[in-house]
Length: 97
Image (cartoon, rainbow, N blue to C red; front, top):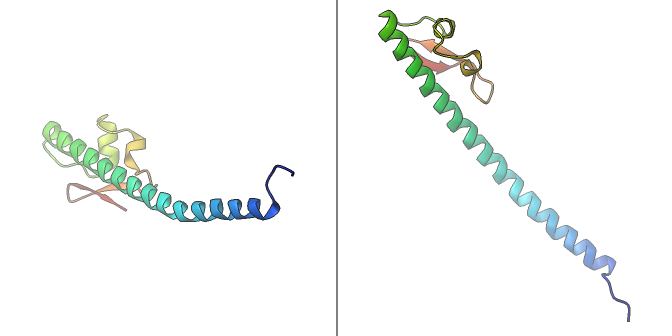
């Protein structure tokens, strides 16, 4: 008797693996979206903190992110969320464009 797998057994195993991949990929994408959103929320809090620091030093609210960058309170990379959206200052608070 020969040892080994038949073609049908291999196809069945590949089908099961493909089904498992198809079930997990959407969940992984959803988790990635949640992590990106949480990172963006954290970035907004960082910019809000920089706005408060700017107000304490200059006794006025910044008009743009560039004001915070000039005071070395933020870097240029901190003016953008992980999802690529720009952060701007509206009424003294950090908001997304």
